[in-house]
Length: 347
Image (cartoon, rainbow, N blue to C red; front, side, top):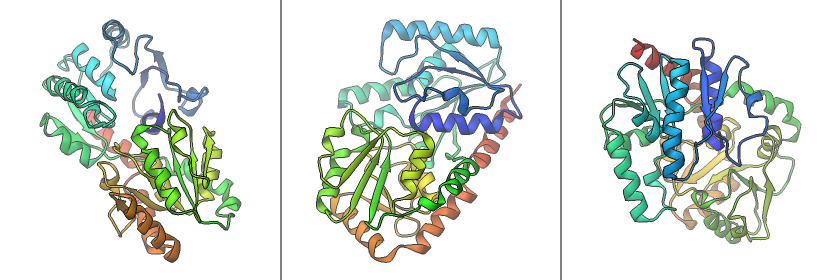
């Protein structure tokens, strides 16, 4: 219940609740909104898994194994869908997928996360490889993640992430008068200031362009890396405040070392912001370089793309990006694809 996965779960379940009775077995994180239940449809049920932890803990993981088995035994679900690595591993061994169809969405494989040592990543890949032999369909959230999945199992498909464009449009309309009021050219990003998001490179770009304002909407353990005088760190913001900050910027930038398929990118595309992002799985599945945004590999690539954005405005590019989200990357289309998959497997 944190970050992009939280947004994903909200969007998916709120769209599907008209067709299914939904129970969410969850654990909280520091980034979990205090009022997270208010984001969901009132018909959705919540059960906290006391022993779910993000880090590996043999004792707690074994307890979580039996805890989710007990939860499923009480609910007797027709479908079980596991989200993220921890639930994906524990859940695939807790359930056999024979009586109840089992699905798993990685939201970014742990073995692709370069903040872990090579040895740890090899261990994660081994765990995913062994777990992939269980009777479970993997549903990736991007085409790039799907290609990684096919290296592990052929029992796989993908449904691309989508955002709730209706909800976002309401917030945009409510704050339309604030859009780009600052004369200084402004670049923003949104998320936790952590190794994955590569704040060190973000800072280097800001230092290379002192005439540009950079805004990081969020907070995190690596905020000391953001030392350039032209960087503003807003801290964590409520949803509407974050949208306000986003609307006042010209460019959305992601320097991530890896991604699943970032919600923040899709929302920026819908807001008609020029998107300049790292050339990694997830980002490159959505952004086509020079057509609806810019893909970058190094500092010089980012500086060049920002200069182009500043000089030209890239009107056709942002319109193309907006159209992509409207017709492909939204929760209505995403939920309809999931509904078809679920119904095809229900016994």
